[in-house]
Image (cartoon, rainbow, N blue to C red; front, side, top):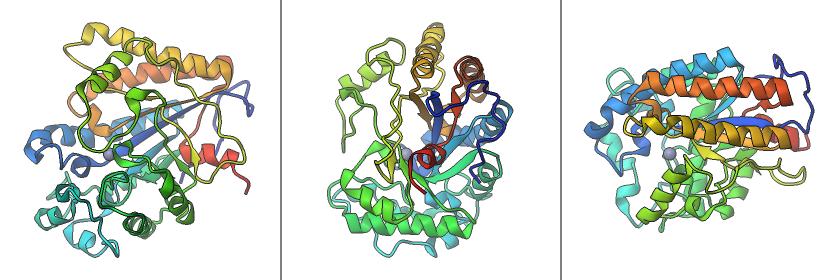
Length: 338
Ligand SMILES: [Zn+2]
């Protein structure tokens, strides 16, 4: 399922080589339902569905291993299977609009009828590509820092995610916290339920997770940091062998969509990313790029072209410094005793 280390072209493979890892938060409407209407994001989400096979083809061509942190609801073939797969306890958010469960009644019977809420055919495609790890973004796009929810409702959610995945023959090994709401207290539950790796947040203040609304200054700072070096190079050393499971595979950078108004600056943005990758490759660090398939949804061709340029640069680093492409579970497996 998540492939082997075979097929790498590196001349200098060693444990001190830098690592390039990619994770994608695959959620369709379940990740946006509390902030946008379905009509506002329909075209972008349909674009995400078109982008996924293209991303997979590009990864296959370039030998890239990646982690697809997928919302459990998307594994379901339609409303009936989802209603049949509910957790034993539902999240008790103080802000009730955060819970997606009331919205299930209005979903469609099948993926064909309701492609923004269900995606088993895409889940299947991801699983069938070499080096691609099908991971979890929780069952319900669960918010681990929101008031009202508890560790017990988190456990029930993650159990439901493992159940629906195992129905498709998949064991979930890595987790990405929705909205990056990392909760240290929940790591023990992750460990008990078989999770060996999670994506931690970038260290800078501007990337620290919050619940609820965040100040505009933080968003503006993150936008500027995509073009200019405000936060350093964002590579991370490998986790110490005695940490975890689950081990932290921290994010380095969100890959933002190609922006038409800022097109003149795209070369700068590309250089910001490839410069960070090069820094990690030279020092044996891990560089972790992440995004959502829907970030490619508005202009699939331009975003695939941008990704291709990043992966071409990876190939140079692979040959020059022995940098390797591994998914999150593969990184954890190198660190953890068997
Ligand atoms: Zn998400």
